[in-house]
Length: 246
Image (cartoon, rainbow, N blue to C red; front, side, top):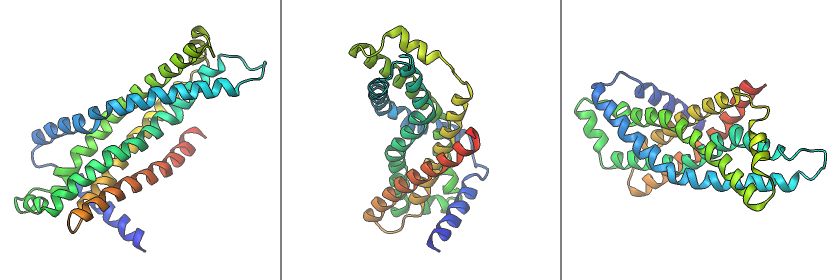
């Protein structure tokens, strides 16, 4: 029954998070700050992983497509579909769950054990809304930008690898990218991205908010935030795929 209690506490906290804020101007400024800290500071790792994973996808696809009846442009098409449907929205979100989720949980957990959250309550401020809502809003707004950025870099990385190794010509790869394009796939990827962003910020924020004890418990809360966020991303990936693509 432990997981039922955890789920109940999480849902109650989410209800508190979305209560009307006391001062909207302060929240808008805080959302902008969180977009920079949680999103823009992740551009580097997103860029590096996307470029190299796109290159690996292209090389692997080229070595696996050996049948003479399969056209070479299938390499570009396969890289595009892999990146748009699964790699960028899901794998990058899992990476951000580790980087951003641990930061959110440890930051809020530290505020809890140092009694800063208690001080906010004494001042009449809803700490759940003040601390967690800007993070959720920032993640939901900036994560789609990161994912689109990742898509372009991964496909570009595949092109660079294919051309540099001579596995596929530039024109053939670009033709494959353009072939049989389904615009709904982008919409599907962005829906997943928004849901995953909400899960990362809210679950990590919950574990940080519920921290009790000292520095050791903050570390435990950070680990739990990352683990539970990753599990829920995989779970909701299955649900959203079933709902939107079947």
